[in-house]
Amino acid sequence: MGIKILLFFILLATQVVGQNFNEKQRYLLWTFHARNTTIHGVSIGAFPNFSEKERFVITNGIRLEIPGAGFLALLMLNYKSDMSGIDSVGGKFDIKDYGYSETVNGINISTGTLEEDKILYNGLTIAGVVQAGIRINGVAIAGLVNAMSKSNGMQISGLHNEALYSDGVQISLVNSALVMNGLQIGGHNRSHNVKGVQIGVANLSKEVKGVQIGVVNISKKTRGIQIGLLNVNEKRTLPIFNWNFKKTKKPAEPEPVKEEKLND
Image (cartoon, rainbow, N blue to C red; front, side, top):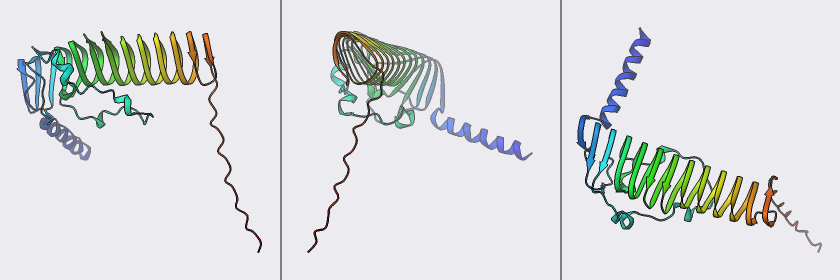
């Protein structure tokens, strides 16, 4: 009997929490500019959301942002590389560290979706010009720029893919990721940590566990091979082929100098 009562209160608490964030259920067609709403079908809107308030909107189906920001998104997007000020990796991606307002379970189509929308994508998201979001589980395709905090799947764009954490594939003219577990294919590939493969004209990384294939390959900490015209790692600089499979030993710290007392 006691167990049944406990389960009842757990279920009740779960429903109350769910109602706080999704008080309204809408079917077939509704706007994603609503608040505390779950939309089953098609959600539509004409422009990005600029309010900093969390709206808790879920779309189960298709999200259409028409006409959207379009080329104006390039000017409106706070597009500065998150990696530019980061020199070390401190832990893994945690969704709790990011506030988000929307979740799309299905397909998102827009001319430009901004990071101010704070969206989680589960499925396919397509933008004519630029798009940004907190996380993509699936495929993100953009005409010019893809910018995600976390990418689980594939990013494809005409100019630049960026992700703080990427587990999957990036294909673009320029690809950048703080932590890359997978494959980068592009003209210029850069990252802090790579576990996988970089293929491009120039591949730059601070730490590589895998393979770099390009005209110029540079890594400061390597556990793998480099194939290209110029290959640079912490051990040597060589044309055509370079390698390193040993961990770099940290230099020994100098012993403290002992002060001897002088006799009077």
